[in-house]
Image 1 (cartoon, helix red, strand yellow):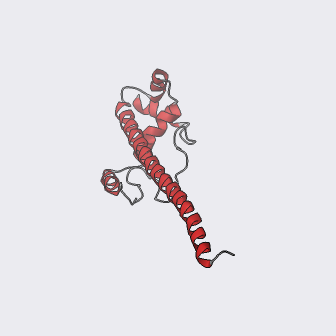
Image 2 (spheres, rainbow, N blue to C red; image 1 turned 45 degrees about the vertical axis):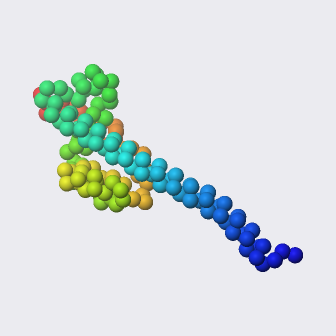
Image 3 (cartoon, rainbow, N blue to C red; image 1 turned 90 degrees about the vertical axis):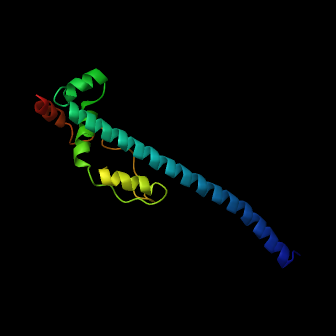
Length: 143
């Protein structure tokens, strides 16, 4: 019959291997989540910059013309320019390693992002509903 010490040793051995795998999985998920958050932040920066460029160029080129030249959807262009206007100052507080960078961005005005522990859904806003009639308004404003 197996002694209590031998049973304890076997359990500890089994638990040690499982703990190593659990820690590795948790670490990998954490690293990937941080990487994803950084990529989303970069994408938001690019979208904001696109909106700024589009807004500045409205007096010389309309959304429909830009869409023809760039092969982009007018709804996408419109979403970027309208997102630029309505998204200012609505960023949620974040914590973690990128909080200083987030604080700096928050002071300059930026879009809402997911909070830690909350996985943001797929990118939305590109070609979103409600922006479908906006290209005509932008063209009318640029004229």
